[in-house]
Length: 333
Ligand code: AQP
Image (cartoon, rainbow, N blue to C red):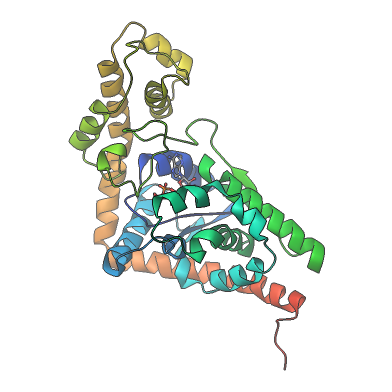
């Protein structure tokens, strides 16, 4: 049976949130089936597009890897690695930069959002971020890329870059498809439900970190911004309530309709507490497992080294092929 490859990554740009978990990580674990092989990386090269304190950055990179294991990434079914450990990412990214147009990158909404957020540091890396992401995906000939809704545009540009390259140089890359959950592809901030939940948000009340203690999770949900309608309904005029209902539905396995029936006639406080309880139930074992893995550095290092070795074996083959096709390959063989 020919296995299909899966690739995804997460930036160590903060503590992983409920949004990252629901939009991406939960699916990462589910995609580890017998007919697939998964490559999952801690995307530290991507995180450099925003200023990082080197010590904190290193620590967060290790923590992110431990959290991925705690969320169910199985080193027997997946290669788990740190992006900067496989040098082919940066090399392929350069080649792909040379077949990506400025006009395409200009249309990326994440670049616009992040430039507004980091107006004092609009660097070239922020602009070419989607090309590095295309390199991540294409190096592993990935058929599926499990991501949240905010990354859909980046997977689409990776497809365009791959198709263009294949046309110019002959079949080289598998064309990837985004894999976005039907519910939960975009979890919103608890403090401003018109904005997506982000791990780098300076206000910790805006997000649930997967490692938050139960009392902190409860407090954050209780403080979640809602509205003054005093009616539990699922519509775009009540984004705070719609966000809570989505989270409740994801963590209890109930549909939105079932949730609306349960909370019919109840107050916002009851919805907030029930949502917090469902989240706490699922996240508690993950937090415990995370603390256990983080304390076992020998195990963690072993997993990451083996993951990097497996990833590099595939990445090297792809890059070799790309260099051969583009005239960059070895000259004096
Ligand atoms: N709010 C969200 N809802 C659902 N999915 C989300 N993802 C991010 N936010 C949400 C998905 O999580 C994966 C990892 O994200 P990333 O680390 O690559 O960067 P991001 O998309 O920029 O996520 P953040 O949390 O907002 O990070 P910062 O604050 O550093 O920009 C991706 O698959 C993403 O879609």
